[in-house]
Image (cartoon, rainbow, N blue to C red):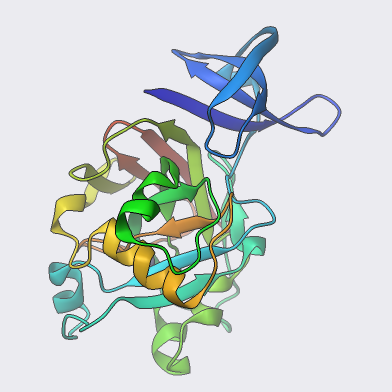
Length: 258
Ligand code: ZN
């Protein structure tokens, strides 16, 4: 298993590197499946670089109510088929960047949603489950931040889930990790809020991907977020929220007022 981070270079360029302990080694020429590539330059301390989210300039497809316990806490039924929505790429932030709460007049109840997300490495159109699985480049942590009051008021989810900074992703992508039964957790200020496992998804990843590609082409770099387990709850200015996916790492973001 390899961990590949995307980060900001000294001249503002976007670089990719292999994470090894607390260090990062730049890598050049990775293919879209995040294979190949060669090591270039010296090592850097992870703590000294600005990590970037995956999915820059690509689309983010997410899944609603994909865990029975979360559907129940939302007082809704399990969906009969996957419930798909999208988040704009303008909402992306990386590990260590702030989640900025909109002014009170726009949103009053902002929630965290801990999710396992995958990065697509090959173009997929009307693909079989088996081909979809082969096109997964890697796995990462995603916080599907949601203005719950706006979601309820609007009747659809674009505005509620699309505010700037409402899509933290990272800290990096794990390549070669078995995603079928991973623990997914959220903590706020160190206190446990969500604790689930990917095996409890109503629609497992192969089914989700095949369903999405039946209607929409997926391209290398696209992010697919697979839904959240029970325990979603409010974020307030000054909070630190952590999303941990077993085998990947911890995505940490502070919350602040605009
Ligand atoms: Zn979600």
